[in-house]
Image 1 (spheres, rainbow, N blue to C red):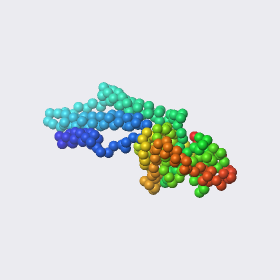
Image 2 (tube, rainbow, N blue to C red):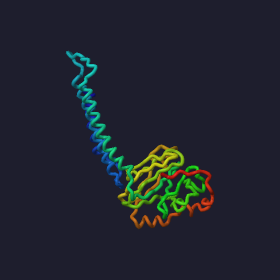
Image 3 (cartoon, one colour):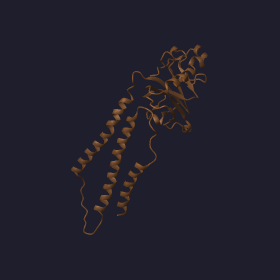
Image 4 (cartoon, rainbow, N blue to C red):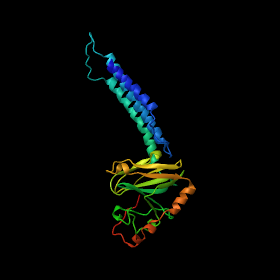
Length: 278
C-alpha cells in the first residue's frame, strides 16, 4: 500500500509542480506563438500518459497484491490489449507530430518580402552581416578567412563590397518586419538561439542554414548558443535589439561596409571559387 500511495502522490505532485511552478518560457517577442502552442499540446499528451501510467501501476499494485487464496494466472499475450495499446499510441504520437509538421512547414517557408541577415558563429563569439544598398549579400567561404577578413567574405565579389559587417557589437532588427536569418559557422557546430524569438537552428560548418521570424516587440534580448561548442560555450553570448523604424535606420547609417573596413582586400584576387551563401 505504501508503494501505491507513493505512486499516486508522485502523479499529483508532478501535476501540481507543473501548474504552480514559477519557471516558464520567457515572454514571446516574435510571430512563433505556434511553437508555444505545439509544446503545450505535447505537454498535455505526455503529461496525461505519465499520470495514467502511474495511476494504473498503483491500481495494479493494490488490485493484484499478494494474499491468501490468490493464484497467479499466466497470460503470455493478449490481442485485445495489444490492439488497444497500438491504437492509443498511434493516436497520441499523431496528435504530437501533426501540429509540429504544420509549424515546420511555416518555419521553412520564408515570406517573399523578408530581408536577410547573416549570423556568423565561431568559437566563441557572434558576428553579423547585412545587405548593402544593392539588397544582396556577397559570397563567402571559410577559405577566405584571414586576420583582415575574419568573416571570409569574397573580396572579388562586387555584390559583397557594400555589405554591412558588424563585429563586437549588438545586432539590431526592425520590429514587425520579417527577417530571414542565414546561419554560418566558421569552425564547429553552433546554434543561434534567442529564447524570446523561439525559433533557432543549428549552424553547420560548410553549409548555410536558415530560419525566419518577425520580431513583434521592441527590446533587448540575449543571444545564446544552444549547441555545445567547446570550453567557451557558456560565454558565447550576445544581444539583439528590436527597434522601431527610425532607431533601426539610425543604427544602419552608422555601420561600415566591407569595402570601408577591409579596403585593401578588394585588390587581392582569390585563388578559389566561392560558393553562394544560399
